[in-house]
Length: 287
Image: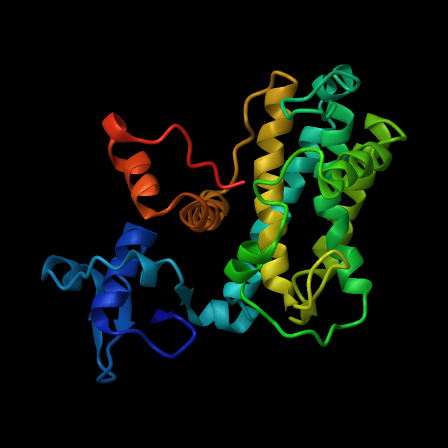
């Protein structure tokens, strides 16, 4: 038996079927629970045409088998597991000889050296144990989308105090050199493997934020975005191909970036960029 849930109970048949289509044919022969309590194989439902084009619903589903329930698997732990896999990829990239060879060269990002970019990438790993060690905040909680709507750094000038601090912080984080930084990141990822999956969900707030907080899992998701984006930046900077990431990690990041792009550029521009090359805008960059 497989349950399809969006956090508010079992889904109607058509939503579960659409989810099966998105997840893949591997689930097609598994039964899903119908609202009446009976079961219907997903393959049968798909063939009968009971599929609603509802990507927004399917994207937020959690699939659980009895074995998953026994392991305590959930949407929360899936995000953390994705983060750990991408953090491991970042650690391997930082250890690449090409990164060391280009250490003092300019990166693909304006006003940031390869050293500074590597330090900033590493910081997305070091952030997690740091916030886990902090007292739990009491500031009001907001969603991850509200968080990205409120931060001031998106689209800001490169010479703002915040962006200058990012560059300085990256350089300082990597001051001991490429080998030392790569070793620290690898050790931190190994430490996180033991503590992050079982860490209770809690609220997180960084000192540079306004009077709000986000959940630990939303914070992990935001660091996942940073890891994926900056791994691509660093690889490009030193002439390496972009690392391969788990598809669900890329989908999570693209979902976030798309929402940010919608706020920055408006629906018509995003729709045209994704569907109409003849009238697409020059850019719908989210960040």
